[in-house]
Amino acid sequence: MHDVTAIIPTVGRFQEVKELCMRLKQYNIPSIVVVDGPYIDDFADLLHIDSIARVKFLDENQGQAIATDVGVALAETEKIMLIDSDDLISILDDTCFTQTLEDMERKEILFPNSIKLDGGRTIERKNLSEVPIKSLRKNFIGAQSGVIFLKDDYVALGGQSKQLESCKDWDLWIRALYNGFSFKTYKADISYSKTSDGISRNLTKVLNGRFQLWRTHNCLFTTLGRPYDWYLLLRYVAFNCAPQFSCNVSLIYRLFYPIHYFVYTYVKSLLGR
Image (cartoon, rainbow, N blue to C red; front, side, top):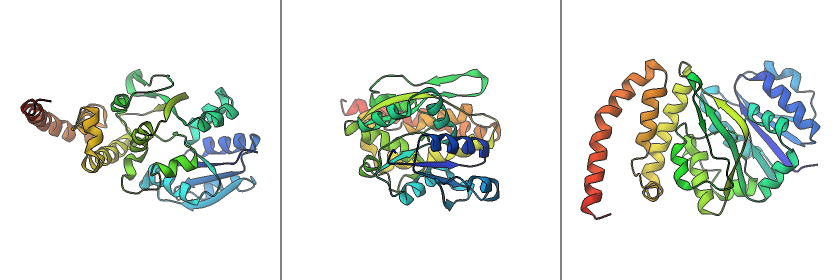
């Protein structure tokens, strides 16, 4: 039996979670924690599964990042997986679960290998054993559920912190790289729609979170060579978010980004860097 607790932060994907729980039970996972919004009745038929532990209900507006953090705090096993319901179904369908655990032991961080946007455009992540820190800049959407850590590693890297809650995964990846971890992708696609309210809210949270990260850990962005890296996210929001939201952000981006970029470049030249 694997000493792993599966933390499933999810809102609304009832069928996927039911399927996932049954698959996890087949792999003898001893504990499954479903962290969800206020939809208790919809999961009533899951309660007969022995390994299910309904431990916390959150309002859906609190977001998956906070739900994951709450789930982690409630877990008591030595190992832990931070997973998203539809992502792990892909893992169990396409790879050996034992191999996944072995990857975790080798301090390899697993995460989905691509993001699909409207219009058929797909952002692929390189399927390499190591990903340079600078490649994190391409993760415009920000923190992704589906990242898998050992519990001890997660806590050691600051996974319990509430300080940067909306971009904690993204921040953890950077700190993990500094501590000798490597990245490994697994076969899973995360899809986003421009017209959904969800991506609007998600990108707003990530934008605020990444700006907070820049304020509190600007040395990371200096290392990346882009102290104003959060403007890239602002640009992405401006051109890919829901129309009713992106028009204002686009105006802000077009007005202020060139000014800040000019000032930054000018100061950098004066300092001879």
